Image 1 (cartoon, helix red, strand yellow):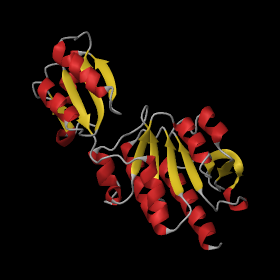
Image 2 (image 1 turned 90 degrees about the vertical axis):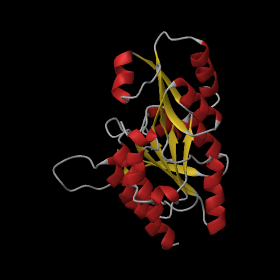
Image 3 (image 1 turned 60 degrees about the vertical axis):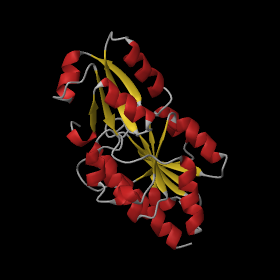
Length: 246
C-alpha cells in the first residue's frame, strides 16, 4: 500500500488536496491531535468519501519517511465515478445496464483484475463500498492493465441501500455463492448487477438478502472455491453468453 506516488504527507499538503477536491481514499491522523489545522482536515474530510483513521505515530512513520506533522493521506490513483455515470454508459451503448458490485474485496490485485474483466465483458461499471474494501490505488490501476481508464468505478457508503435504489430503477441482482443454483440454469439477461463477495467470508448476509438469485459455479476439482476475481470472470462471461443468445 505504501506507494510514494499516492502518499500526501503534512497538514498544509492534505488541506490543499481536500480543497482542490483531489480524490482521497484514507486520511490517517495522529490520535489525540486536535489543533486548528487538524480540526480543519477532519471537517473538510467529512464532506468527502475519504475514510478517517486515528492512529499512533508508528503507523504514520510506517506510511511515509517524510515529515508528516501528524497527518498522512492516501490519494486515489484515479477519480471515482457516480452511479449515474454507469447508467449513462449503458444508455450510450443502447444496452441493458450491467454492473459488477463488490462486497468487500480487500486485495487490490483482485480489484484490478475485476475491473479488467468488467471492461472485457462489456460491464458498464463497477461499484465498491467505502469501508472495508480496496480503493483505487496504483496497484489496482496497474493490475487493471489500463481498464481503469475506460470502466467507471463508483464508491458508495452502503452497498445494500444502493442495491435497493437500483432495484427501483429496474435492476435485479445475482450473487456468487457455493450454495446457489448452478449458473447455467438461471436467466441472467436484462438489467443486471453481479455481486461478488469478500475473498474470505463471501457475500455478507445483508447484501445477500437483497439479491434476487444466488448462482454457483459448478466445480469438479479437489478444492472448494475459486479466487474472487476468477469467479467474477466466470460469472461475468456467462452473463455475456446469455446476452448474446437473446
